[in-house]
Length: 198
Image (cartoon, rainbow, N blue to C red; front, top):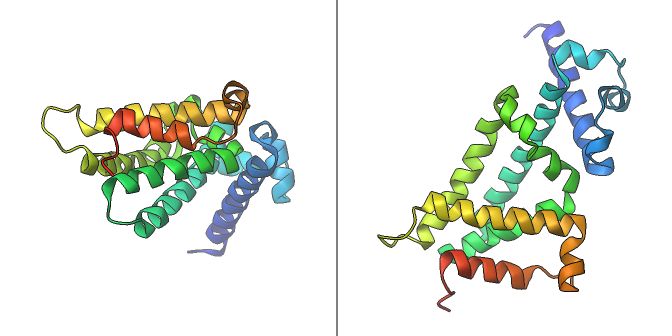
């Protein structure tokens, strides 16, 4: 690798890291090209040399979010007992916790325009994570005649995403009078996976 190529890769990485830091600390609204460049310590025109569009830079930042969530999912799955239902519940809690603690990144990761754009294979980065969730659900619901695991996992995920979104907006707390989502999560798991046999 030439020195110029290394410099280019280093600057690309700095821009993405600066964007990831901005979205974490200040939210999606802070992700202008100018602000990312300022945070990375480069000229405001530098991002355009490495990312042809603003969407491509945002996609690179969102990719970091999916990679982080995937790493956390691996840690959770490796650290949970052998019970398949407990594994699914742990992944669900992780998802809700990620949405609560990394709300800006969570919002960026699921922006339809980024996922639809196909920049930097963002969909290809997110789909394996969903595949892991489908596999975990399949271990809980292997009975013939049930809805396919992908359908059950998708329904469960949409419920989780709704909880995460409403929780992030503060609407859930207003409706329930509490910040505790555990009762909702148990209800959602029972609805999609059947009652917990324990």
